Length: 91
Length: 234
Image (cartoon, rainbow over all chains, first blue to last red; front, side, top):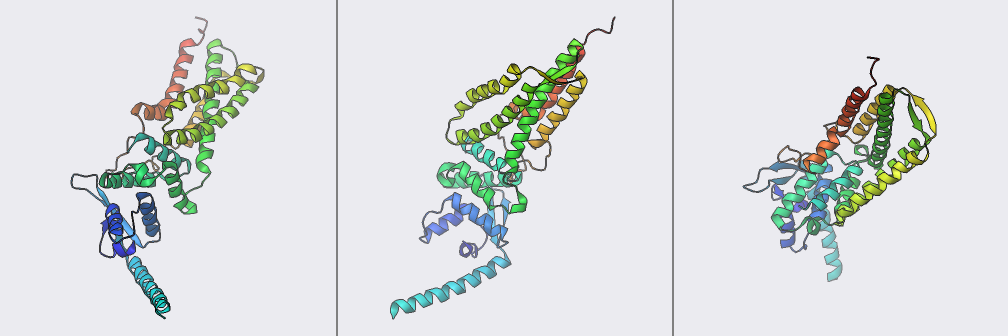
């Protein structure tokens, strides 16, 4: 989720579509928004409503500085983990 | 968004003391997401009661008290029924120039009524979610009969007071019921974050009754007292 937001501010349905596009399956709204709210409560993400073009308006989510740092830290940990697993699988 | 899904969601969120602005935010999220995905709220967000529950569970402890919503409903039910009983006794007393009598049965009605109101809300949220709202009017009828029974059957006079005192006490209890339901606080209204407006969560006449009903009943009682008061010997 934080990885999707690293590309820039975006809204809930676009996040769900992006996650589906990269093969993570259909993430339902009932899963997506509570998770985004938790990230916002942890100050990793912030949100604001923008008027839609003829639509009902959209809630855009943006990665905060703390969110970027958290993503970087997680990416390093994940990289180290997958590297270790790959070595084990190849040995 | 269907009325049933939204009403069940709002009812559970209110009962779990989720702040009004957070409810408005969640409703707007559901509406915009469904408008873009083409899904129904039930398809995208699942059962409304469970979704509201999940939101409530997510809030930090100081922001809510899980049992406060139910306690408010019970308090509003007890205060509302007590107020109606006192109002009727007070109006009857003043119009007959006699003291108002409060019977043991009145206390029984208040207890049964408070329990019924809590039970009604518990059934109402499930009934909305399951499309069984037609059950509610007969349930209200049964509840009214059960609530009235102790007052009808146990008529012994527990204590008496002047009619005006009973009416004034009814006014205080109406205010308690009103405040318990959070109608007058303003700060905790459900507001659409996109427009700043309150979404139409119920027919306007229902909202108007909830907001102004107690005050209107009190005014009606005062008017009846003035109209029915025995002449001053003239």
